[in-house]
Image (cartoon, rainbow, N blue to C red; front, top):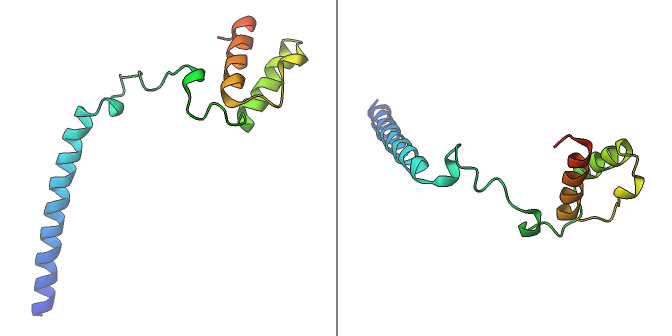
Length: 101
C-alpha cells in the first residue's frame, strides 16, 4: 500500500514538471521566428542558395518537369540529369511561360 502511495506522489510530481515544460515551450515558440506562421523568410529561398541544391532532382520534380515540358511542347526542357536547384528553376520558368505561375 505504501508503495502505491509513493507511485502516486511521483506521478503527481512528474505531471507537474510536464506542465511547467509545456508553458516554457509555449513561451519559447513565440520568441522563435521560425515557428511564427506569418514569418515566411525561412520558407522562400533562391534555389542557388539551397544546401541540397546540387543533389539529383527528386522524383516529384522529375515527374512535374516532364509533365510541364510535354504541355509546353518542349521535350528538351526535361533533362534527367538536372539537380534539385536546376530542376526548380526550370519548373518555375515553364510555369511562368504557361501562365501557371
